Image 1 (cartoon, rainbow, N blue to C red):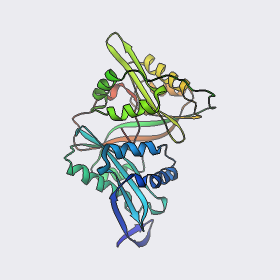
Image 2 (image 1 turned 120 degrees about the vertical axis):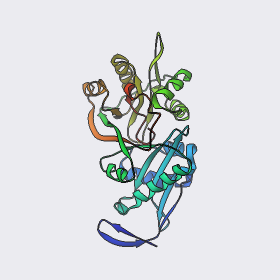
Image 3 (image 1 turned 180 degrees about the vertical axis):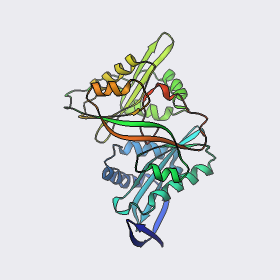
Length: 291
């Protein structure tokens, strides 16, 4: 039995921490729906396939009330995501306990750097656990009338893209990008110039919105071309993009197409990051859960 302080009230509950399994995905989806997040069952599967030992749930009376998931990228750094806590048990210390469990797991693996994208509400918690700011990200959302048809485009060859993305992201995430290209081939775009690949983008079909990202371009015209193509190929009413605030052209391109700012995020890290990648060419990230 442990005592938790829940929103000012005292309560005694049994809290159990354990590794997440595929049988927990429905419970994770319920927490995700309550938070109005955009992830799908396939996203949970990606976490469990990549690092099942680093995904955890918290139980109270045999009921899953919290989750956290981690992905390790080439032992260079790890990503922490899907930090979700049941509304009934928020402000009880469960989220912090889950984060500490994830950190202990990654420390035991000898991972030198841990990264995540924090909401304004979560940022103070992460700061207390040793995370510091890297840069700012903004989520933009477009609401529009749904299209009637969707493009039948197929994904191009990804060899050069995956090699370039390792440089841009700072580590190999080819398994994730290949999964995206298989689930949404119509969203994969590759721009090629005289010097090779000059831009690329992927996308996902989320539970309530299509999501553009990663979205990488060397210049404004390439970035806008990929954005317009993505919008033409999506049939959804809602589109989301998580953009680097420092990018010189994404804000204007999104505003011109009717996007509105939804919320800020802060990319944070714990430990030294000697593989920062090339954020200067990133227009939109893969997502706060994956990096």
